[in-house]
Image (cartoon, rainbow, N blue to C red):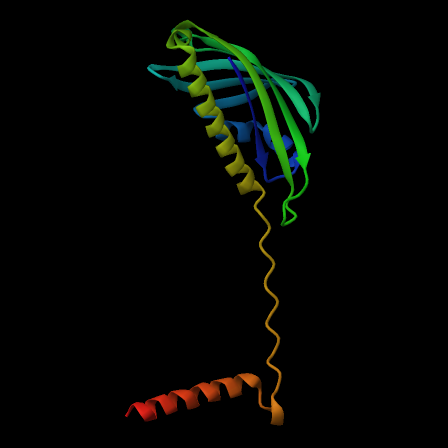
Length: 197
């Protein structure tokens, strides 16, 4: 299986990098993830509950990061086993590209990834279309959660308050313009009322 996609994030390249390397953020964002623990330098153990079609299983796996160029890219190697449900293994190339700020000046970056994976066991018997569909759905779910978590951690700055309206210039004789406007409206209402009688 091969999958390739990209997503624009409303955070800086460094903020996205920090989140992608934070086990707590990943645990919150990976569908069905029960744990991610560091087991060594750039190595993690993962436990995840998955359901693909009729097959449900708990997977235990390992993740190892290599070719690290902070805060731009890394290669992620993964392998996991779900007992009789089967296994999965593969690699993913992850890249963060800084983008120009949006119209409001908010930082942005693009997350690009390419995944190469193989599966075996009962999962492999489900058929490529079902597996590809489940993988794309999980990826979309992950990125939506990841984006929401980044927005929670790095909210958009509040819009600047509008400048107060300038005080109405005094009209002739030192009476403010708004007094003349209200007075005129009252006169018009009185005239309408008078002629309607």
